[in-house]
Length: 143
Image (tube, rainbow, N blue to C red):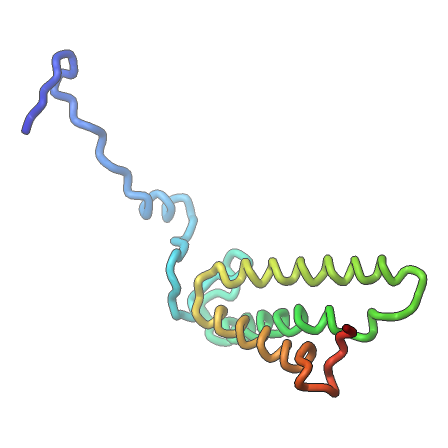
C-alpha cells in the first residue's frame, strides 16, 4: 500500500542505524543483557579481566572473597566491643558492607554465569561459616 501524502514528495523514512556498528566505531564493546558463559567478560572495570583464562579465574576468586567478606563483616566479634564509639564503628562497618554488596551486585550485572555462581556460593558459604546458628562455634550473632 502506497500512501503518498501531498507535500511529502514521496520521501521515505531514513534507514535504521545499526547500533552495533556505531558502538564498535566509538570503541565501546557490546554489553550482554542475558546470561552467558565465557571467560571473555568485563567484570567491574573496563577491560578486566580481559581474555586470558588466568585473569578470569583471578577475577572469580576476587569476587568470591568479596562475597565471603560481606557475610563475615556483620558477624565479626572484633567490631563488637563495649567502647564509647561502638555505634560509630558499627555504622562504618555497615557502610563498608553495603558498599561491598553493591560492588558484588555490579559484578553480577556483567551477566556472566561464572560470576553469578561464585557470588551465590560465596554468600552461601559465608553465611554457613559466619552467620549460621547451626555452626554454633562460629555463630557470633547476639540475639
